[in-house]
Image (cartoon, rainbow, N blue to C red):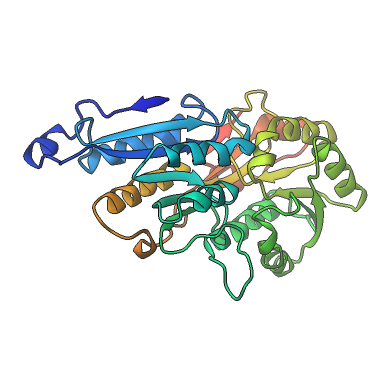
Length: 323
């Protein structure tokens, strides 16, 4: 068990309003405290700003070390430990908890809003939730529009675009909407699937065979975990890709472009949702939060390797430029 407390932060507030007991929050993270430092800092700093400290709150963390199939077991373990609120990825992790703890307050971290749908008319949602669950989603409809705008600006002659996704992932329900945006930009979209460990090589070969001049990713946890392999294959095939997740820590400089949700503000929102629940608000009354801030990265080193000249107007829009 790893216990994190907030030393010296917000102590004045706690002294003025002593709490009857220390609240206990469980947090399941994707990798480790080191690799997930950005989200951890946002979460912890916002809790401290809201007045929580070591006298009023303890947080127990469980880290999956990049093995996302561990989420359900880690979540169930924390739920059984008697936490007051559980912060956990959506999908199977929530389902694992709900079977034994149907009323435990949960703050979910989901790829899309669809995961927050409860069962309706006898049809299972991606993750069954309801009045005891709230959370944040990484999906924003406007982000797809922006990614395609940037791709078209970077590659003016772009007409055929590959779309890399994992079948059965949380992004699948959004495919028709993404295809509609592609048609708006007069792009022919070709779906290519990441099926197994050979996913990157097979998918990119298939996309190139069908004339794709570039590719867009819909990266869930599995694709993100294999991102280094994807970066390497893309560099080898010299296929420009717009990633929907950060290229860091790919220090080898092979990723070309990325437009992605800034997760630090989202995890500040997670802290606010936890705070509201601990102060008595029902999770079902707390709105699901969508990302409001995005970051755009370009890699000029990768562009040169692909013999691609990115227009200055595109580079100027980047928040981060790798040279």
